[in-house]
Image (cartoon, rainbow, N blue to C red; front, side, top):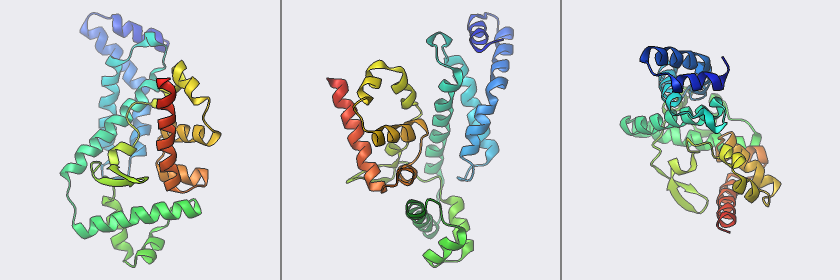
Length: 242
């Protein structure tokens, strides 16, 4: 059964037995998306099995929310939905978990070294290189890396010339790039953007890359990317107002 037919049959089913069977069929068909997205967040302080469970629950909830009549593929709809649920879990989890202050400080220093090295060389430093740069034992580097993420998404960071909660600079669970592509007015607003600004939008809202990753790809500084984000959003807002 094709995707649209499958979802229409699920929406039109009246008895719970049929709905349950169809829901299971849909979930099984798209479970691979939940597994792939869960794998992207491995190594950030939460077990893979737990991430799969969170992603799978988001998948099932998304089945009920999906409207096949809108002409959007379910994979396009559910990917940002699952990603958002996982990020929300990390946000809540980070508020509950407390680590030794020295270890937390070391984790912050490691993140800074990772970003600086990535911007300069296009790759992240090894554990041995981090130990040498920071003057600590490799064992402590490993411990700090294990707790380095999640961090509190409510903590204040420097974004350009302003301070903002970390959560504000992480892509939202809504896939805005898909919205851009599907909305005529937004697509028209993007016409006047430069090529580097269009690349920024694709990296930031299509691939959900961090500012440091985007900077490495574009060959510019993270500060430049931060200012570009602010500038691009202002341009789009002005054009949409017009």
